[in-house]
Image (cartoon, rainbow, N blue to C red; front, side):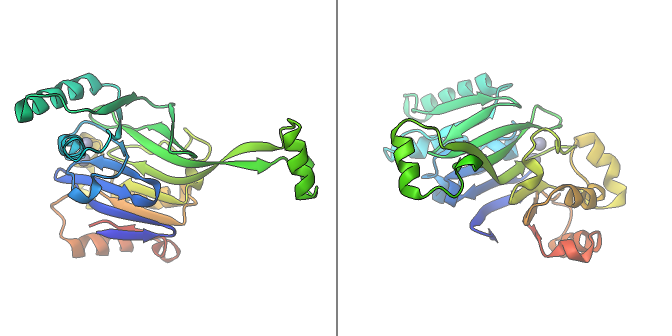
Length: 272
Ligand SMILES: [Zn+2]
Ligand SMILES: [Zn+2]
């Protein structure tokens, strides 16, 4: 499945309790890795939301396939609670597989961290609210922007000033994509740029009124929250993921679209 969201394509699958794995090739990143298709092996950055099997079980394949193909280890970011156990698991699996420990790179993260990656990107770690420790990610592009006091000055003169050591730019961040994996709440106020992200990927596991209790118990979002969520986010593209397997695709479309004001339908896509 591939969904076009402006300049990005969101590729992958997401089904509650089965597997969630999403790639944004343009940013060389993966959000969650419940399974690992071979096409994802070359992608360099993996951001894991939490340690439920359907969100991280593809990691050993990702690590081993890169190792076997002579590709340097990718950067795998995981919640700090559980990072040691994952490390132990990868090492045991690799010993079982080939008698050696594969090269790999794990970075434990927690809410509030800012993770610079590639040349000009940064992932801000967001707190989520789930049955096990869970985090979301807001990926921003860092750009140098001319300070207002230098507006209108010709280019060659700006270049001369730069050569003379004058700082003519400020660094600004442009919010590109936010990923909210399994959660019962939305951390809208945690980062000032979150509500402006161009693309929001968010779970909505439960749809029917009789599943409200189930959503609360298992700490997932319910369709009841979706209209409020759409109001909070200014995003041009919103991708809804992680629907419960109990709902057939036609029913998901029907229920979700019926719950939304018509002006919001055009910016919403469903990953079914
Ligand atoms: Zn899940
Ligand atoms: Zn979960």
